[in-house]
Length: 209
Image (tube, rainbow, N blue to C red; front, top):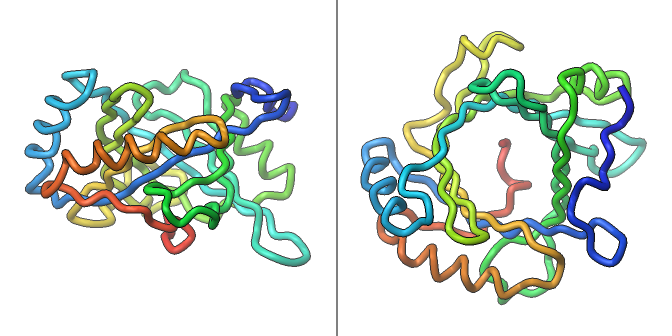
C-alpha cells in the first residue's frame, strides 16, 4: 500500500494548515438524556448521527524527544467504510486568551490495510479502544458525546469494558490557521450547555486517550 495522499485536506496558500479548536468535558451516565435533549434543541440536526468506532494509537519512537503519534480509526457500524488516519499536533501555547485548545490536524482516508502499512513503517500499536455515541452539528461546530471502552483481548472489539461511568463530550471546529474567532463562538455555545456539562480547554497530552 502506498502512503495515503495528504493533499486531500483543504489547503491554504498551497500547504495544509488546518487547525482543530477543541473544548472537552464529561457528563455522568445518568445525565446523558438531559444533555442529548439540550443538544437536540440547540443543534442543526434534531436527531444525532450515531457511531461505533475502533481506534488504534500507534507510536514511532525516534532517537530523541517525544514519539511520533498517529491514530488509525475504523467504523464498526459501517465495516466497508475507509479507515481514517489522523495526526494531531502539539497544542499551541501562544495566545492565552483563546477560549479553546488549538492544534494542527491532518485527517486522511486510507484503505483497510492501514494497520499493516503502519507496522511496516516501524510504528508500534500502543493501545486501542472502542468509542460509541452521538454526533451533533451546529454550523461548523461538531459536538461528539461518546462512551470509551477498553479492549480486553487485543483486536477483539466484542470483548470490551467501559472505562468510566461517564461520557466524554467534545466540541470541536476544523478551520484554517488564524481563524481564532471560532473559539469565541465555541465558548458561547458551551455556555448554553451549563450546568449539564462544563466544557473546558484541556491539554490532551495529560490524557491517555
